[in-house]
Amino acid sequence: MAVRPLSRMLQRVLRSGLRSCSSGAPVTQHRPGEPPQTAAEELSRRRQFLREHGAPFSAFLTDSFGRQHSYLRISLTEKCNLRCQYCMPEEGVPLTPKADLLTTEEILTLARLFVKEGIDKIRLTGGEPLIRPDVVDIVARLHQLEGLRTIGITTNGINLARLLPQLQKAGLSAINISLDTLVPAKFEFIVRRKGFHKVMEGIHKAIELGYSPVKVNCVVMRGLNEDELLDFVALTEGLPLDVRFIEYMPFDGNRWNFKKMVSYKEMLDTLRQQWPELEKLPEEESSTAKAFKIPGFQGQLSFITSMSEHFCGTCNRLRITADGNLKVCLFGNSEVSLRDHLRAGASEEELLRVIGAAVGRKKRQHAEFLLLLQDSPPAIPSISSQDPFRVQGIRHRVSFSNQKATLWEGGWFPRTPLLAQWQLRSSCLQRHYSSHLDSDDNPKCLSAVAQAPATPSGPLPTADQLTHVDTEGRAAMVDVGGKPDTERVAVASAVVLLGPVAFKLVQENQLKKGDALAVAQLAGVQAAKLTSQLIPLCHHVALSHVQVWLELDATRHAVGIQASCRARGPTGVEMEALTAAAVAALTVYDMCKAVSRDIVLGEIKLLSKTGGQRGDFQRT
Image (cartoon, rainbow, N blue to C red):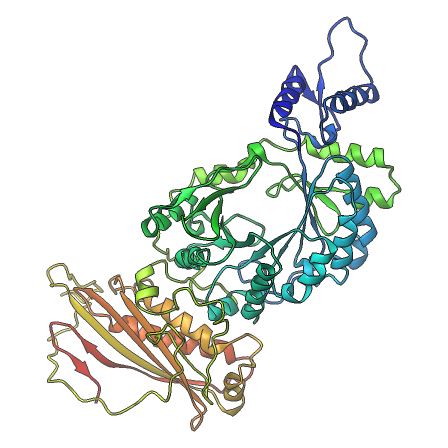
């Protein structure tokens, strides 16, 4: 890389009366009275200048704002072995015909040309690059390119442990692993596939083979995983990880809006509350990450602030898609096909002109999305009723709580699962799922939930009239402003009669849609928090605790569901408990309906309620 004084001097020279030509590289303005220079003469002049001043790459990779591009990302495939709900539909996406994708030789030809012109870092991406059969060979051949200092890969980690020893021998020098949750059940829900333990094996294998730091990329999305920030950072205490929190960015099809984005400053504030000693590390030139470290921790954490504090001014990245298109900006729609020019027999010089023209058109910043962000009101923790994360079954995204107390103190998910505790399993003969955890933070394997007859705690006074209608019979919300705050607890239940075929598939976790019990548990918890948005005259309740249990009843071929909610306030939480049980039951139906339509939902009822002015209730 050129030293900073040289870079600044070169930029001053190039900016002196500069304009853009078709190659995209800066050129000097023609002065009156002087004979005009041809394009070839101008190119020769610029190349001569760069050679004389030791510049590491040609003017073709320098844009009209003086940014020098030394980092190339190459997509090896469009295919992926996961189906992340925020990335693609369950059935996948249309793929480019194989004949239109870059061949291995075409990839290496382009890589060789870019490295010759000054690229010193190449990162292999996808899709999922490690599903390409010749990925090890590609790394080995890239490693032979003189001047290429770094070969990295970004992977979901599923195949990493198996391939990493070969990749390291071939010359792989940097690893980024995508992981958006540390909770096995949530991982399976998000990606619609199993494999959490394989990702963790890949992380351990990378550490074992001496990669340091191992970068873990976590896209932070409000209502989905922002509650796990502290858990991710805790991993850096004993492991050489660089956990990189990435602001949620807009891409085609992910229905981006500002409400889902958790900004860098908001994340940083959350972490400083836990670790006030968090210290900022010096930023490297052209780095996209703002790095921090907790004193005494082995690893570090970083923020990729693509949206709130963009780094366009120092961007040095170019991208080649799997079908051979050059993208000069991740956010831009403009692409130029290098594949077509290659296959048309273009010379190296002609390819460089095409590349230079594309680089020259690169904008100062990805303005369209920054304007979108600036024109939007600030993101707030509450979840709007318009949020597409709302529960609609497995095919849509589920909004997980952004209230840490609800999840951690309530025990919905374990805090910082040990890396050795990879899979959420049950050692019992029957499968059971509960959002309640034992004191040692291990997922609880339930025995049969006791269904002993409940006993009443006393007579329950009844109101003289319906409380949700006014004197004229119109719907009205009850005014609870004068009621005292008390501890409120409610438990409700439901039963789903599946029939023998669907029951067996659920019991063996063989449904094509995924784990019905895990998904229903998450849906039930989420439904409890959204009750006031589903039932018009319900008050919004700040729940402090939600539990959802599901167990299999082999004698009835049924799933038994219990939901418990707790809050402190002026109104009860029985509606939240009933909604949780009902939506969990509906989710089980949705997961199983492709197998059988002869499924019956029933026995949705309140089992107990405590804390109200009218006394406690327990169903007999």
